[in-house]
Amino acid sequence: MQTDNKKAILGWALYDWANSAFATTIMAGFFPLFFKQFWSSGVDATVSTARLGLANSIAGTTVALLAPVLGAIADKGTSKKKFLMFFACIGMVMTSSLYMVSKGNWPFAILLYIFAIIGFSGGNIFYDSLITGVASEKKLDFVSSLGFALGYLGGGILFALNVWMTLKPGAFGFSNAQEAVKFSFLTVGIWWAVFSIPLIVFVKEPENANVKNGINVVKAGLVQLQKTFHEIRHLKTIFLFLFAYWLYIDGVDTIIVMAIDYGISIGLQANDLIVALLITQFVGFPSAIGFGYLSGRIGAKRAIFIAIAVYLFVTVWGAFMQSRNEFYILAVTVGLVQGGVQALSRSFYARIIPPEKSAEYFGFYNMIGKFATVLGPVFMGGTGLLVRSMGYSSNTASRVSITSISVFFIIGGILLYFVNEEKGKKEAKYLSEKT
Image (cartoon, rainbow, N blue to C red):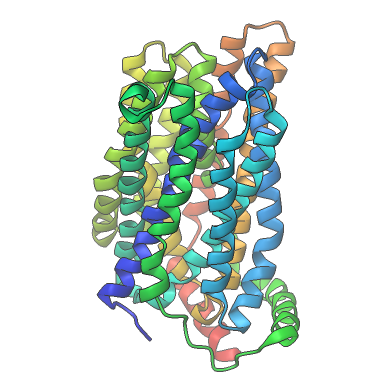
């Protein structure tokens, strides 16, 4: 085992640096803006929001259905890295292809976006699962937080460069900002590819004493998946955590993918929203590392509670927000906790699962996360459409829609309170010894 090897840890964490460029420039930044203003030009804001929410939901559903199956197959062979790079390549190619989509062609843009999300999210299943082979239990919180911290920094750096290109297109040889935005999609694919190399070189595939090959690995994986479905019902701690995680991460992911769209809907300027997103990225870098150290003092569960409470405040405050300065303050607030809740949820879960089945169990983890992104954007978009149909303005409908997300943080936090980490470790140890 290569546990706590510095090169392996850095190589693993740098993949977060690599693919977070997609999360920032594409998912949170330029795609929502470009989709509304270029590919869906002239369409009512409520309709384009619903389209964007539907696209995220379709991609999330696809990944959610595939995740446990692929994870189980990967655990029975030596395929975690192969699956990771397969999905990553899909993401890189589809993201780069957005460069070629013409104005008004929103169906093609949505199609490429869906496949890009599948590549991004599918790769994360196997990336997350590799953490148990890279970090010891003692260092899980730190290593997970390091990954998210580098992700915020790397994604923020490339996004800042892309924003600069759109603000000063002539300095980079572009005739206008639209050309610069389209080129930024290409830079994300290249960035993703280059910084995936350290993981390929330094992170070794975890050992498996019962390796299967060819069609046998598929059969063995499907058999194992069937067993796990029966097991997970009896692993009460894992089951309860996944249910809690499904709800509170729903709110987190919805805010990530819909924040720019929400800002536009309530009348904020595109440049103001981009600046706010950059603030979140660069605040998120030290904050994610800070949460890693905080968990060492108060425990990961309590640190997650702090993040959930802050998010609950954000959803209520966001509904009454009026000025761009308030949006900037909101961006700082989100940046303080976003990386922390993501990183510590991952490391907390890694502690209560059997390590030899990490890909399969992280398949369930990512399945839950993707079903969260299915529900959240649709719930937010549907709430907005419902309020709009009652005769209220688009601005009011958008404000009500953001508040509706608070219910996921409230219920998720309540369920997390009943999750017992020590009991979860005992259940995982018992299952490992049994199998």
